[in-house]
Image 1 (cartoon, rainbow, N blue to C red):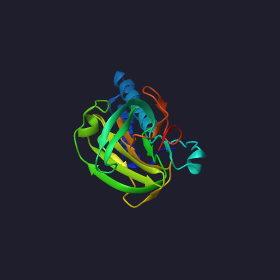
Image 2: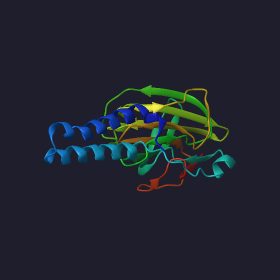
Image 3: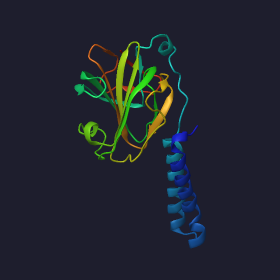
Image 4: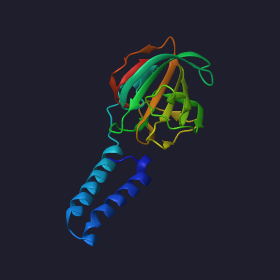
Length: 218
């Protein structure tokens, strides 16, 4: 299944793939035929691969315990550090950063059940997403969710290749852990910021899957 969040990109990229495929029929079948056909197939394959949106086996435990945090994205745990978040959490926090390569599924999912209490979009730079400064300077969204168990704050952050964030939530929305809410186009990362007293179930280097991997508990 392809994601609805990439429909515009999918149409454009597949149109380009078709154009590349038919060009050799107008310029003659020589060595250029192989080049254009190869480029066409590579682009079509990448389009279907990058914009895939597989179903996930969302843990039943998320419905039973609102304190559990499920990974909002696929990727690799890049760092777990001390941080400060004053806009929503209002204090020192723990930060889990997950890096997505262009090969990962880029559809994002809600990490905890609750109400969106804070949302802000910040346009910015395009530093490579695994650089420490990308968390501060790059284009990003800031999302704060609260439930009876506590608060959680997270950021969609684009990288040097990613040039667009997509989301379909806003302040006041009631959200369910594991549900899709948006996408980051191409290489990117997500930072999850949680209370210092929260439990963290992952470590640096772990691979996580959106909507499936329980990464911590409020």
